[in-house]
Length: 268
Picture 1 (tube, rainbow, N blue to C red):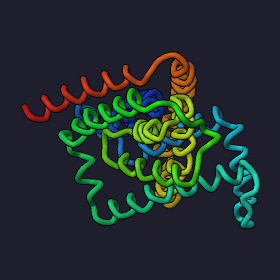
Picture 2 (picture 1 turned 60 degrees about the vertical axis):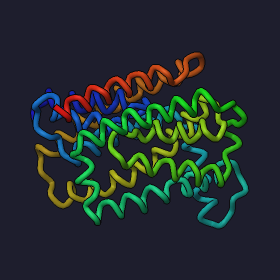
Picture 3 (picture 1 turned 90 degrees about the vertical axis):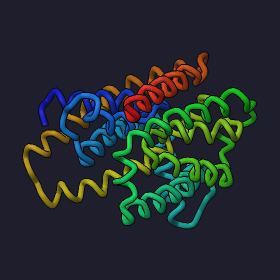
């Protein structure tokens, strides 16, 4: 891959990962709309790893609390806020891991990944669902009130992110808003939920790199990881600040417009 292509992938991933507009959907569409070669799953995951570093850095206090809580959780103790957060994150991640494994072994993920009609429909439909949840549900909870029941529900919402064009952050934010969490708290929980999910995907892809230590491939992974990290950190900081005064409606409009354009392209 050319350096330009790598930078384009990194910037798209970094900017869109934490916005509810589907980063994976944009990455899948990149070769279709630009004529560039498909970046492949490994580069996709490298871009996600860059955003992972960004979200860990931005929410470091929560991440550190969950890490220490995990140690207590291993010993069978859920007696601290960190241990409770770690337990909720674990419970919320199980559904998407199981569903992702099923899609992988059945080959369904490869089928839906290349279907522009599915991606476009997901952009539109789940954008409208986000609008419904954001505009109709009153704020009744904060992130500190995250319960195991809500973790399970949000984990089931996250499974829908396996459909290209859905957006992992967008669908988990939708689930959180539907449960009554404030916009900033919904985004915070969604970002924390992305950490174990991205770690699982990154660990799987890294096995291929370790088994085949190709210098150009490692160089490409490094470039994408670094620049997606920078773009993601800037985008995340901006979004969290805007959510204090702006709703999710601008993202919904973007999703619907892009979805309609893609539907027209796929049908013609």
